[in-house]
Amino acid sequence: MTKAIEAAAAAARAEDADGLTEAVGELSKLDAAQTGKVLGGVLRLLLEQQHPDGLDSDDIKSVLEETVRGAASWLPETDPHTLLIVLAGALGIHPDDHEEVARPAPESLSFNAPLLIAHLLGPVKSVKPYVEATFANIAQTELMEEP
Image (cartoon, rainbow, N blue to C red; front, side):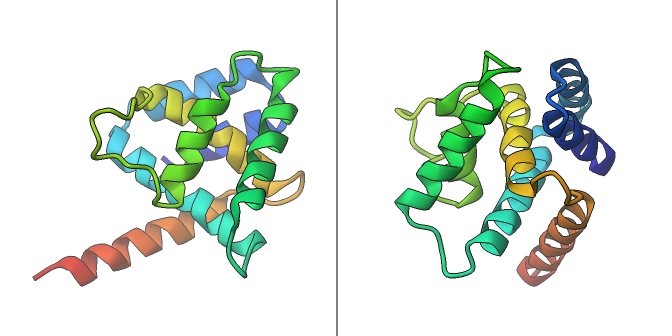
């Protein structure tokens, strides 16, 4: 999973639609719930790092607008609504349990999450440490939840 996430983030940073599609294809072969948990965890870590005092609505709006604006030229199918759902899910504020709230397909979420990740990483950072930290956080949480 780490390699597929790295490939997706690299493709998004390089504005490579074909590479992103290929990487998302690899991600879609994996368990959607686990992939979503890891992508959300990476996003959350990046957001927390860049906003140590917390995020407000202006911060969220800025991340969303900058991501959409950056992707619009090379990925016209970028969906701001799906990006917002990915962002809200990463922050734990998306109402997953409400039937009246439409949830995009896992492939759509996996396609849009790397756009946010690439934006938050900027041109220099590697996503790998964030993926590794997310796996460590998940493992620690699962250990704490065991009876």
